[in-house]
Image (cartoon, rainbow, N blue to C red; front, side, top):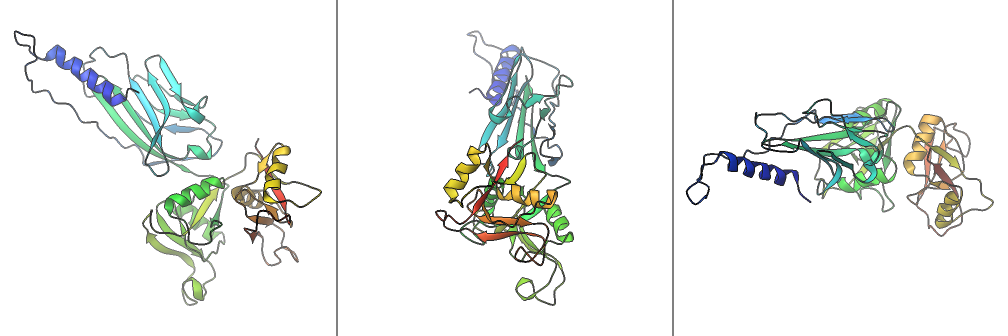
Length: 353
C-alpha cells in the first residue's frame, strides 16, 4: 500500500525536477533544497465521547507553501492504534475522489470537509471499540501534518466496578487490564471516575489500574488491611507503575446499556456451555459483567438468582437488600468462578438493541 509519506516524497521529487538546474547531460545539479520534516501538531490531548453518540476528531492541514506541484488534492489517512500502541489499523482514507472507511467504521466514518484544509473525521454511533488513540496524516504537495488524538469514554450515567480475572487478584498488567475491561463491556476507569465513585460510597481494598497508568483504590471505611484504622477515608495511591511488569486488579467503567439485560427463565440449571447456547437460542448473548453492573446501578435491576456471565463467573444483582440476598447493602454479589461443567446455575443474557 502506498503510504502518505511516500506520496509526499513523490511530490518532492517532482518539485526538484521543476526547480533544479540540469547539466548538459540532463543530470540534476545539487541544490540547496531539503526534505521538510513531518510536523506533529497536537490537538487537545483527549476527547470525551459517549457510547451511542457521535465523535468529532479534529485534524487540519496547516499550509506553509504557496505552490502545488501537480498533486490531485489533499490526501488524508486516519488510523487507530492497538491498545498496546504496537500496531496501527486503517480507519479512513481519502485520496481525491476515492474515500473509504475500513472494518467496523464502514458506514459510520466520514470526513467533515468544512473547507479545503479540513481533514476532521466524524464517527457516528460510537461503541467501546472506538475508544483509544487515533492518528491523522494529511498531505498536499509540500505541506503535511500529523495529528494524534485520544478518545476517552465518559457517560454522565455510568458506574465504576472493580474487576479481577479467574486467576485471582493481582494478575493483570496494564495491557491485560485494558483487555479485561473491554471484554466486560467497559473501559479502564479514569481518576475522575474513580473519585466520583468513591464520593458515592465505593469502598474496595484491592488496588487496581486506572487509565493514566496509576494504581489506586477507594476507601470509605478505614481499617487495618486497607491503610490502617487511623488513616483517613480517600483514594489510596500507589502512583504510576510499570505497565508491562506490575500486576494488579483494575477498575472498569461502563455506561448506560443500549440493549436489554435479563434473567433467562429455564426449566433446568445449566453448565457454562449450556448457558451460552441458551442465550443464543433466545436471540441474545450471554451477559457480561459490565452489563450486570450497568443494569443494577442504572436500572435498579434486582434478582436473587445466581447466574453465569460471559467471563465464567457467577453473580447476581441486588438493588433491594433482604434476608439471604445481600441483607446489608445493595450490591452485585459474586459466587466465584466455579467449574464450568457444574449444572448449578442459571444465566443472565443481553440482547442488543
